[in-house]
Length: 89
Image 1 (cartoon, rainbow, N blue to C red):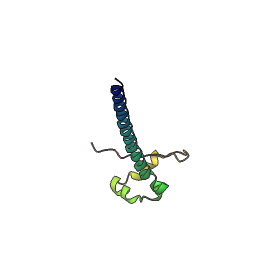
Image 2: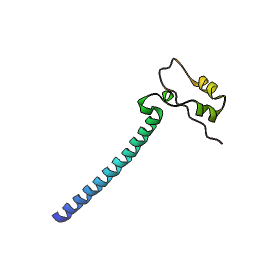
Image 3: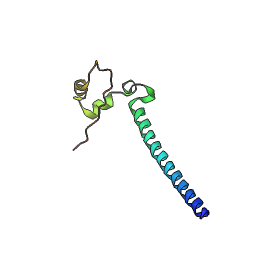
Image 4: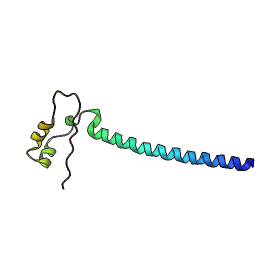
């Protein structure tokens, strides 16, 4: 009877260990995704516009690119604007 109890407890502890490992791995994936996103938005911990050149964006999105950006900006708002390209339909 006692041996079965010990065996059951050991089985539960093994499951708990597996679940904790899976949860940790899941969180690690999410953290890595957030780090990658942060690096894209803030390369070398700076502002993106300080490292990226505007010419590839002008070539890709055309002449209206600057006017589109200008219409979206709020210069006195201290926050950040995230612009995302629309997918072709």
